[in-house]
Image: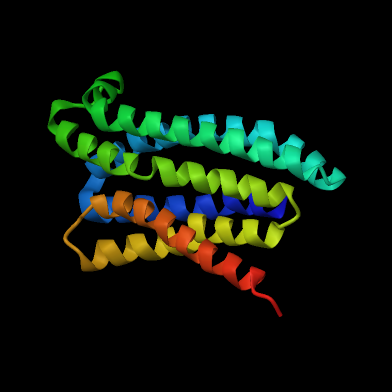
Length: 203
């Protein structure tokens, strides 16, 4: 349970960094925009947690009993479901940004920056779904080290470093937070790829 527990701790640190960055680069309006985006992220992960929460007991049982065929079938079906949900939410956020702003009662003066933030953040829906799925998979199949790599890279190491780099060395302003979160997923997937290659390398 350590990887899952550490995610919450990492998120506290990350939230402090994000709020400070937004306050410096965009002021109160930028912080208010992030509140809308944060609600959308929470909504997004409600779907992801629903899928991963459902499959974790099955994956654990199948792994423990050596039922590899059932494990593979469960992974195949649930991963396709996760991708389908992710693609659907991506389109909703990209195309429905004006409606989302209306639902949240965004002021006219903040409409453009809020829609931009939502559309940038939509670009991480698919990768976020993949990482949520992989994190659950590795936790349930006895690869807690790999799950910890995902948790640390995706919730602390990369988002903090990338957001601070973009905020301080690019003209992105408050959007550095959203681009930083998008780039974090790709960097985490890259590290995971090389980690798995190292672990599978024959001695």
